[in-house]
Amino acid sequence: MAWPKEIPCKRYPSDLTDEEWEILEPILKKADPYTTGRPRKVDLREVINAIFYLNKTGCQWRYLPKDFPYYTLISYYYHQWVDNNIMEQINTAIHQQLRKEMGRNENPSAGIIDSQTVKGTPESAQESGFDGGKLIQGRKRHIVVDTVGYIIIARVHAANIYDGHAARQALTALFSIVDSVKKIWADGGYRGEEFIQWVKEQFDCVLEVVEKKKNRRRFSSVTSTLGRGTNLCLARSLSATEQRLRAETYIEYGSCLYGLNSTHAAKNL
Image (tube, rainbow, N blue to C red; front, side):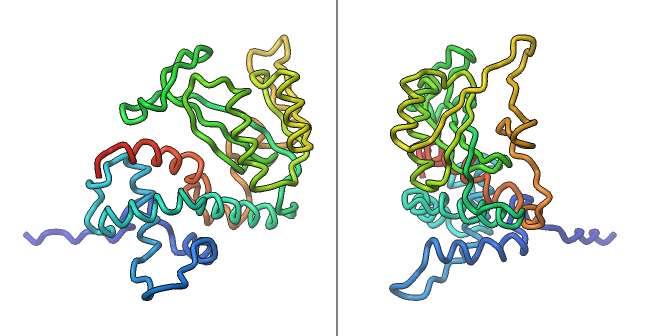
């Protein structure tokens, strides 16, 4: 009996599609140009595919499948891109394209800041802490999104750092990328006149704390004013560009790459 032929399929679900690479390739070439030395032989698309594979599977660098470039090369590009803020530049470029396609200004004028605590791993023990409010031992990710729900900036830190303190780092990073934000909404964890005044003095931006209503059990996200995607859930857009660019091409920067930087770097190469 002959062995049945396998049905052709995509190699890995995390791989970039041709349409996604068509959008990402010019952005990457502009953010990380190669102008000196011999012509680059490595396939940058395969480098990104390998990084996405690492993020989705959580495997160690040495356990990357052999059909990817050698793991040391992937590690080199990953750390170079993180250290030189290439990931942030890619995220910003895609973010601007999406907003422009939706008929909005490329740079947002308002945003929402919030944080989420997640349980840590053994590799993150050195940067881990206990969140007394959530009763979780682990790390906390701070994210700033626009009013549509697209990530502008993300920062990861120990969970025991108070939101008002860690938000200073997140906002400093935010205004190093875009200086057009004039108003930021936050929940009660960011209350405090000193912090609000600091935001005003440093960035000429108004921080408005949206308090939870007495009769509500959950935080109210003023969706009637801002529209969809205001509670830090990354809203699915009807934009054709975003439909082609799956979450990996712009959320990866916030949810994965900072995590890889601390988690995988701690594992032996």
